[in-house]
Length: 286
Image 1 (cartoon, helix red, strand yellow):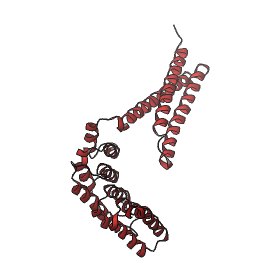
Image 2 (cartoon, rainbow, N blue to C red; image 1 turned 120 degrees about the horizontal axis):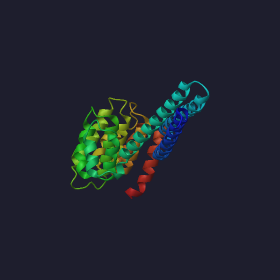
Image 3 (cartoon, rainbow, N blue to C red; image 1 turned 180 degrees about the horizontal axis):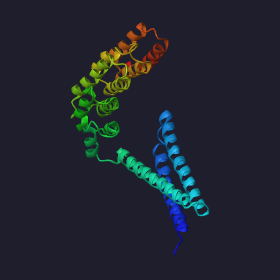
């Protein structure tokens, strides 16, 4: 018969080994998953992974130490160490399972179009904005009416609305598919520009809407886009996106809009961006 103290040590070591395997799976899965991210987001994601691993390692180390010390001290010390190691093991296994499930859910390129549409239709769906972006990348034309409705919904999350604008730009990229109601798309995108002027926190939405209108290359968007340049209620990166969109649309009307803004805008850097866009447009007008 195995003495209790040796049985406790075996249980402790088994829990430590299982926890170590879960930690390895978690580390490989998590750090590979965040490898494509950048900047502050990636920093915090890396910090999260490191904190999880360090916490598991610290608790497991203390638990194993107490379990091994138990036979040479009071019995409850070994029991406590075994329990502590098992808690660390179960916690690590739980985090590992949750992370793997999360990563599988977030693998939107591997999902069917029907699944993406189902996720995009649910306002409270997890990572709904990512599903919307994937619909745009696939140019799923039947999703255009739904995307317009999301963009026009003032109650929708900002990330969902900006992703919807981006997706519409990809779907209705010139030449817009015949089975897409281009007038409906333009109406939703232009409305997003005009509504954003009253809310300084919608920069992401207006930025994506401007880019999308540039992708359509429809001259009806020239006026609404022109109005954004040097609008002090919007940040400079939105102005530059508007200049880029007018350059993408091209033509005499877009050129006139840029020349008009160059003459009236007092911001030196923006004027330089406008001049650069006009220089690039010259060959197109010869």
